[in-house]
Length: 417
Image (cartoon, rainbow, N blue to C red):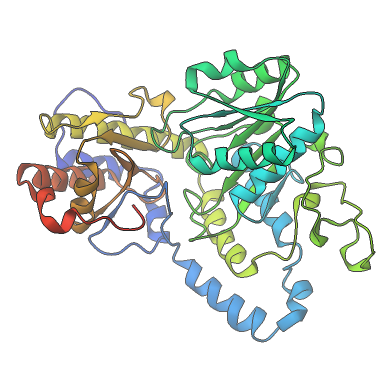
């Protein structure tokens, strides 16, 4: 899958697909005929087995088993069982990951736990240009302390220097949602620990797309979602990692009954679980959680090293073709050019990015737009082919050369971009 300096054509891309060790996994996804889906960094494609799994959960486990299925179908233990399945994909050990709730809720839990672990410190460090909800959640955690804690926003190259003896935790997204730049997890975590601070990582744009080694890097806490590269479905539950050394000491503040040491003892006071289950709050979304397992199983059948190798090749190819074939049309690369510094997405800046993306979607190439000017393309190696990259750029060339993006119907803003 290496790209050389020779001119590429569609046949060369087809040859790369023929040599792809992951090629057969595409057949496990239900992709519409003729559609090129480059938005797996926002919502992953549907596994073919998901519909059958949903039918089974609804008609047999719920419809026939009814309340018995909390035991007989394993519903009650599903958050921890799926956490153990997900753990090897992010470099965690069994008992350190739980699948539950949303990324925002889980971030609130671990930020609050970090604040409690460092009561004499007052600063949470986040990336200012990060996906905004992370910073909003941190602001809420800080506000709940009555002003004792403040949020300090830094940009990529300022983060390490900002960490000092007043830092509670550094809470960073591993792969930036807009540009796709990758932070050095091990180096930032080591810098935080040297200052006595904690490290918290958001894996939404890296889990399932590239190797992650939380324990190898000594990470304290992590959160992430299952609906992007893990293909769990819209609104599928998130996950939370708490290093074993913190369990039983770092307690999250939303003390719901599922995190109780004996939830069916119905005691009048709260007594926390000592393991990963303490990070649960209340009754979990079993239907969506069951579907998330389908995507996890596909990932566990693939080699993460091969996934990363193909991701790099796909994104390198896309950058090369856009810059060669769309030269003069005003696109500026907004992602790192160096593959090792880039996640599994490519972003280009363009002053008319929104109508261009609308025109692309109308032409059967689905990416997305992020304000103010970023067109964003995600490459899920499990189902995106090299020929898809060629054909996507082909359609982009036609849109730009023909001025199709200028049509009135492409100027209208949808609620979701």
